[in-house]
Length: 233
Image: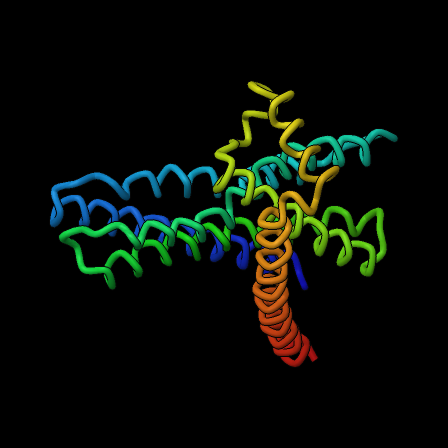
């Protein structure tokens, strides 16, 4: 893939994410106007949090020099991982469809799915960028294993956020209580079957969606490269 096409592709992706985010914001404002309530406006904050991992990848992609490059990458990746669960977290906002309102349920369904899909794209595209960075130090198979594990860690983070109400910044604000909840579920797994049920099933679902999106994008890029090679010849 030449640099000109890669830049153009990134620009198109950024524009798409901006347009999708704008559409989500429009739906949330329109709902306020027709319902007179601001309940679902919190989805905009959730989407902002979901965009943070994608924005962080631009910091990770900055060129580093010296022997500490891999250590800088790992350190920044830890920060990225703390925010990454915010991307798939919006899927769990579908729980709010149980709340009765004057707005048709089909509208709220479109609203939440729009936010959830945009959040997932922010997260998945950021993970793809992380993969490209680690491919400088690891084999393709090792990077795939790493992504597989990251998606399960993200599903565990989603559980912590949805059911235990922990946030990414609680790692700094309330680290000991957070560590206690995590360690208790690791030490006593059979006492917390819901924790591991949600983590396992949600993690499988995230992996299925992610690898599907990645495969489709790979196929599309391969066709683009083939067309470019054809015209070059």
